[in-house]
Amino acid sequence: METLEDLKIEIQKLKEAKEKMFLNCENKEEVIKLWEMDKRVKIPIEAKGKFCPGCRLNYYNEQNCCWQKATAKLTKQRIYRDLNSTTPDEVITLNCYMQTSH
Picture 1 (tube, rainbow, N blue to C red):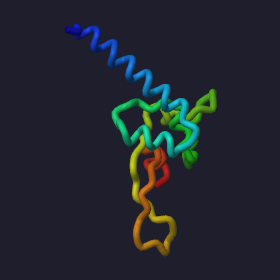
Picture 2 (picture 1 turned 45 degrees about the horizontal axis):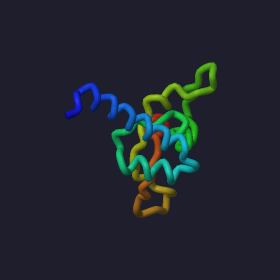
Picture 3 (picture 1 turned 135 degrees about the vertical axis):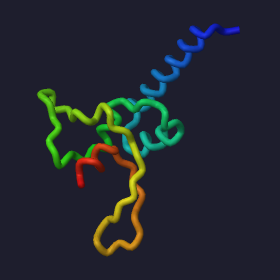
């Protein structure tokens, strides 16, 4: 029987392996597939960058890295592509973009 400490170590190893998988993704679609399999996994900042269209507000520090990206989460949003749209499209984007773009 495994001890609680052994289980904690195994869980940490699994989390690290999933984060590495995100880092190896080449495009948004691969990140989305991994994210949809387990939305509890923390997505590394590098993988989140594939979803960042830029902010209307300038949240940049001296390293030219967005301050909100570390806490941003992927989320499904419904948006209208243009004024003539009658039904919204569902897109996956960072929640910080939706908060700052209004």
